[in-house]
Image (cartoon, rainbow, N blue to C red; front, side, top):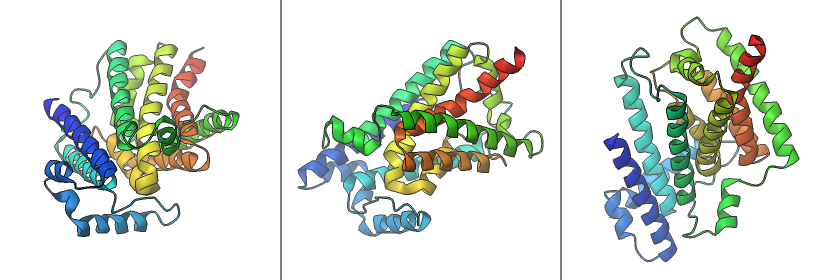
Amino acid sequence: MNLYLAGLIYAVLLLLAANHELCRRNGKPLTALLSLGLTQIDMLWALVGKVVTALNPSNRPKYDESSLVHRAASLLTMAYMMRQIWLLHSTPGENEQHWFAPDTGGILLNLAGSTMIFVSLSALGTGWGLRRDREQALRRLGLRWPTLNDCLAGIALGLLIYVAATLAASLMPAGVTADHLGARALFDAVKNSLPAALALAAMAGTGEEILFRGALQPVFGLFVTSLLFTLLHTHYGLSPALPILFAVSVCFGLVRLRFSTTAAIICHATYNFAPFVLARLMAA
């Protein structure tokens, strides 16, 4: 936990410095210091730009290799990917302790904290209050008040994605579906309270979509963002179910491209809430 907190503090400081120095346009000493000089290596970020472009031939992400903020975000993204890959090899297995609190209140509290962190990093990364005002930042993140199309598309596509993912998981051998990733334990912890399940679905959808689809996808593209999203959920090691999660993430990203991040939030929340409603209907 101390290492996690230190990482968050570092991310905040680096993003703050990058945004501040980008506004000043007269030197980058603090960002260079925090990044150990990595943000100053032009060849590295040119290579990152080529990789991002090659992996996203269809939607043309707006990665700018000359942007100090994009360089800082790339550095943090690579550090995050290395951390998750390391965890994949060091996590003993699904029989170890859960990655969430054992009670409903603790689960929701932890999730609220994660949501606040994701939203704060997204706002900071897009320069809210530093180089963009409120309206500009919301536009950059793809956020708006839900329109009728956002609601209808989000709910309908969320249900469709859930059905497709469930059917795909049912074709896999027992023990390698989403249960392997701890989803079953989390489901059992809140299944008896639909309000708690709705809060869980809404918070997870809001925080993750604002960060991944709102802040990161326009810069790194659909493929890289979906890879990062999949790595976020690899708590219990590698599983054949991970390609399903990757495909689900791509679908959320397509909703963001076609409609808005708001629609993607509704879609994600619907996807998360669907199994709880289904379980309640089957028990009735």
